Image 1 (cartoon, helix red, strand yellow):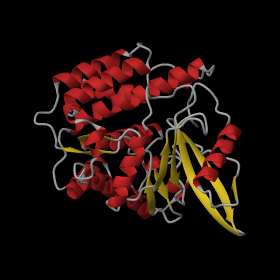
Image 2 (image 1 turned 30 degrees about the vertical axis):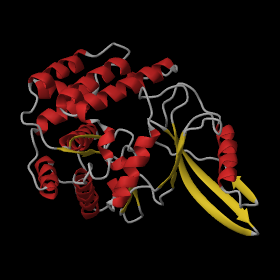
Image 3 (image 1 turned 60 degrees about the vertical axis):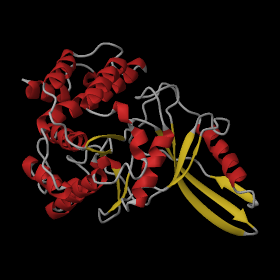
Length: 348
């Protein structure tokens, strides 16, 4: 599901993509785009599955794409930089890290009514959000579960070890905006925007705690994924990694930001599901696996867990504001969140 202030006319988008592909392939006698599909998950950009057939002198070619568009009428981020995602995915492919191959970023809104990022579709499926409690990973043997977790940790460390400067990715976070002082300031600015100024007291307290307890020295800078979760991997039938996806939050910062995002969110989810998957490593072993792949120790993990939970809960607040504004009023949209409970226990 994509959270947006308005519903987009998918038929108009389909027609626009068909016109765009026709212009892109003037040699083709005919270009047809079928009905657009939508993945079942996702709370940020609008993601569409595009199947196209072009015919040239009787020869048919099928193309399968994924299109990402900013949500209609606004979404969970103030701005959407599609070039950012494409640049990161290009760089990852150069490093042989599995990612979807970008096709183009089209900024001319006359085609579909918005800019869009088109990439080649990767075969496979992502895990559902409730993968700890149900689904094919929960039903898999413990050794398969262990393989999924450890290979994810290895891939995450591989992302953190890339030569981001040599790949030209320093533009993700310009030199004057790097460092935890800036990261805290951005987190504070975002939570104020996301909550319409109604910041829960525990999140305000966490910002003060983060400032007072900032690691010194700070960990070295890395390419950060931004949203590293098992749900952001496309898997084959054997759980092999086919692509790491969703790079719109990519930045340059301490790799612990990513590590704590993955570990902290997973542990909160597992606690809410009654326990973790039997094949998964425990907390200390997870950190050790990542550290071994990185070739350095984890720096001040608890601090980064508070930061990551603050950032993730802020996004949840934005989703909640939008769902309430859209007329949804379920009990889970009210009150303290599991993330806030965890933050409160950490900063005490």
